[in-house]
Length: 199
Image 1 (tube, helix red, strand yellow):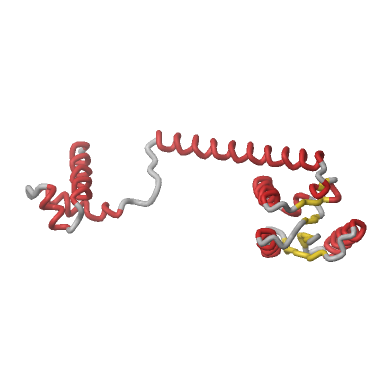
Image 2 (image 1 turned 90 degrees about the horizontal axis):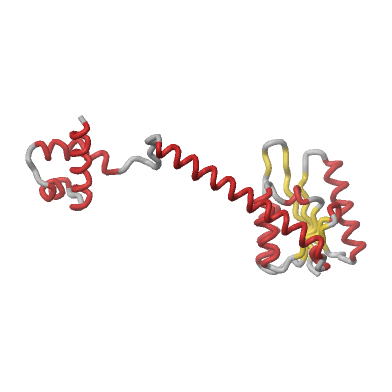
């Protein structure tokens, strides 16, 4: 069995060393003597995920059968991120073992699977709440007249289109003179008509 140990290393070496020793001992008790270690360093607000990324690349290549981590919160940076990792592990038939929390999907443990399913359901619920808040906020902002996105590239042509229209040119002539597609020229003339009607 190809085992990966995942450690999230803090600046406190003692904590890291005790985690590593505990996980290595656990693997030995299970008869998993060849465990490859992946680690990341966290220091305050800064946190590199290169070790996790490397480990997940190995998962995708089929080079890992089980991942052993100290705690679930060591593995994912947020609940949705953790759920995404677990879903990817499950898709590649990689077991997740968290000895400190009694999670072991390698033994087809129904309680472990239930724990993970609840965790993923909570993460999905959290995503839906965030999505609804974003949509609600956008709807409210649009109702207040807010516009999103960058300004149209056509905006730069408005003064020239206005001058040409005021000089009596039609849409086809404006499109030709400014080397614009007819539809763009038509849109600009409509914008000019709308702004002059409002004035």
